[in-house]
Length: 216
Image (tube, rainbow, N blue to C red; front, side, top):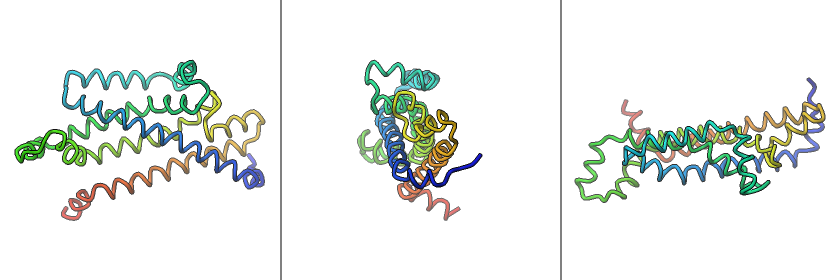
């Protein structure tokens, strides 16, 4: 298989534009997934009878083929970026919701009881005690959801979107491997860079974990 480096240099601007579009779709889905999953996770954590229902529903949504999700959304949002983001958001929920619930479950009961005993209100306990301590587990879910979304954006090519996925379609239709290889490499790079940045964010937001490691 021969790669045409001239084609890559001539289409550098297009590759950059597609990469930015690809990343925007993936990150938008993760952001909306977080906004939806955080309150649902709090409910699932505190109202045990609803835990199985919410987690089960997210699992069911995750089993729907991605192409089918986009097709089902077409009558609602049409051939737009909105369809792509909604579809990807649905897939992030199963990871984000489960990890957030597990993160909240991992907070020691004594820590929460101590905060309540000091007169801290429930909402403040959630925001200043539970969520910060659950952050490492939540961030693990965010990392998985981000990488997963970046890989799934290409599927939206079938509805006229898809970011770097357009390179796959172009390459296959013309039997020209260079766009396909470029799309694969750029998708991998986006996933690696995004994951590395999220690790850095987690490192910055959880200084207490570094203190524990130094003591150990």
